[in-house]
Structures are given as C-alpha cells and as structure tokens.
Image (cartoon, rainbow, N blue to C red; front, side, top):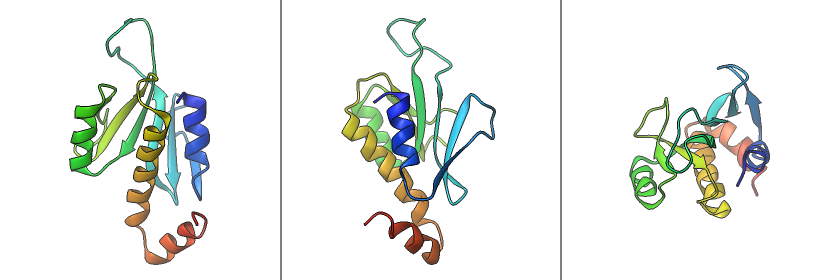
Length: 129
C-alpha cells in the first residue's frame, strides 16, 4: 500500500476528515474530530538505503496486539511521537500486505469510535453496514 492508497482508504471511513494541525507535512485523519491516524513522510531511515524515505502511518492499536504486530512485521514500530503502548507506526515500504494494513486501519478506526457516545457510534456504524 502506498500513501495515495492509504489516504483513499482512510478518507473512505464514515465521517472521516483530513486535517493539518501539525503543518502541511503531516496529515491527521479524524472521525468526529477524534484522531485515528496520521500520515507523513518518514523522518529517519529504517534499514536498506538510508537515502530512501517511506511514508509512515500512525494507527491506534490494542496494547497487546501492538506488541504482537511489532514482533511480526519489521515495518511496524512503536508509535513515533505517540503513546508507544497504544499507537503503532506502520512504515509503508511494501513489506506488509495491503489487506493487513487495511485491517490495522479498520481496527484503529473502531477503537476510536468505540470510545464515543452511543449516539455518535450508531451514526457512524449506520454507514459501515
């Protein structure tokens, strides 16, 4: 999955929006004004060619699953500039299957929605079925 595919998938979520509170270099994706993802060009190298930069996506994650994903995928690291227990950074270098990245996005979205009021949850869930 590249950054364009990721952005399309993130914006396809019900009531999602893209904002730039940290400057034009960091896209922040929100549902009902609650952040569920960020997308930006990585600031530091991660193996391979140190001149090559990849897009990084921060996603909310269950703490136990976050650690498991880091063990499974070298391109999943503790959330960069985020709460390391509850956020992962996914380096979009092509090493993680697109379906798995989509599943991680879905989980992040669901975790954020699950903390909203029942009324807001119902409004969003209507668009998922």
